[in-house]
Length: 88
Image 1 (cartoon, rainbow, N blue to C red):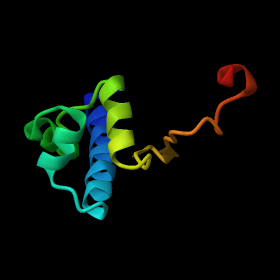
Image 2: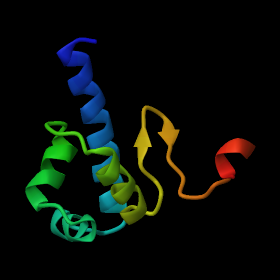
Image 3: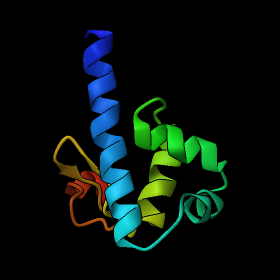
Image 4: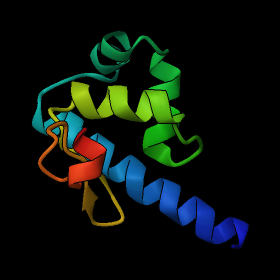
């Protein structure tokens, strides 16, 4: 995958994070505090310059009410999307 394509994907994710943060009336500072990262890191995610680790991805998802969207996939905090084997 090209670097340009990877940057586009990071930007799509960052836009989804920013839009949801704004919908929830959170500042970058408040979101950063909620997931224990710096406000600069949140800014870098929103501009597509950085991409969060899996741990931070799930923390973001929880802080944003389970509404993070990546490439059209909504991450949910419930187990309803898991298969029977994954639930056990």
